[in-house]
Image (cartoon, rainbow, N blue to C red):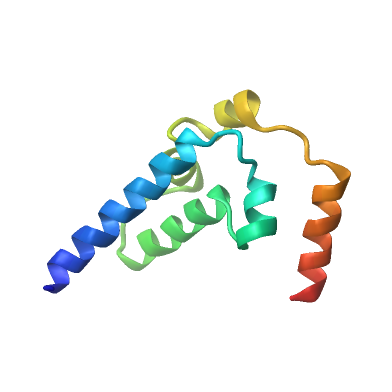
Length: 98
């Protein structure tokens, strides 16, 4: 596999991950954090970090829109539910364990 093919495969897999997350708007970010240690916001922050490394102009709102498929404020208003006490307790316990 050439480096170009590897990059193409990685990009396609990332697009598929974003599509999967878009199809699962019912899965909340805190659930992702508690189970996998990353969420949609993490993905947008990673994109910003890579944009800086590549000298690409990308701000946090643009990065979030690439991940969420819409402005973050719109996604939050339409799909984000308040975290439960149990979710917050799990999140806090995981942060302490790090």
